[in-house]
Length: 351
DNA sequence: AACGCGTGGCC
DNA sequence: TGGCCAAGCGT
Image (cartoon, rainbow, N blue to C red):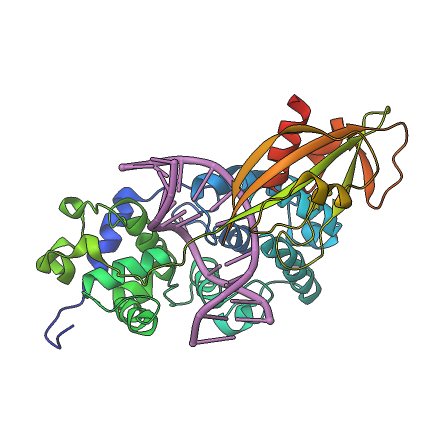
């Protein structure tokens, strides 16, 4: 980035946004006041999660927990069950803790520092809520904004080392008077630009409002930015899970530890997940009860840092006496089952 | 400061 | 198909 490089004009981006703004359920209509609860809820759900995945969860949450107070007063198990399938379950735990803090304080803090102090709210979300809900002139730097900023200023250093430089570049964009006059629209315009035009793989530079000011485009390297450090490979791990039912149509479940992998979520009892496959003589020792276990099917599932291959085995006994709790199979929809466990349930039910 | 932490869609 | 990616945070 040379000293002579010009800053892409905020006015051009805002004009583009006024024509192309996406209508999303958590967005206020032009001239309408934003609802901090909805903005915050959507921002937490959208962390590392696509709009399409969030939409049904957002609507379900608003119906079930129509206000931050309603969310604060709900049992944590209800919140975890409503979040089941969305992933990164620490978000749900922190969401609930944050709701309690906000309800207790009588409302959301209206500035970046106050928001940043709440559970589950980091630098990005604090800026996003401050800008979108309260009109604070901050530029939230997410993956979209990082990409746009890296390109318009041609930051060629790779992430995560380039984090600070890119954040400074994004802040430069937001310093323009036109951006400071419309912080909410400017932030969302950057999101929309990144999501629909300045996309990761094949950016639509031809229709970009910043085409003329983009340093990466000028250098012919837009699609290559931002550069990223290589990621580690995801190893395969193996596990065996047990589908144990009784004559009343109930199945044995277990609660996972409150923190860590799938923390606080419900699971079928099973072995640990390890790199070497399990022999029958080994996994039998982990079975919740002595029974005639029969293979019910296999499940593959990708988690954040490893791939999982699960063997589901099933048995029926006259009476279940084992650690855990029982639920009617018909009621499993209301349980906090993560996606990997829903796959296991599907396989076992079909067998 | 790296690393742990889900899921589904896309090419 | 498999690697990449998405409005990151907590530790």
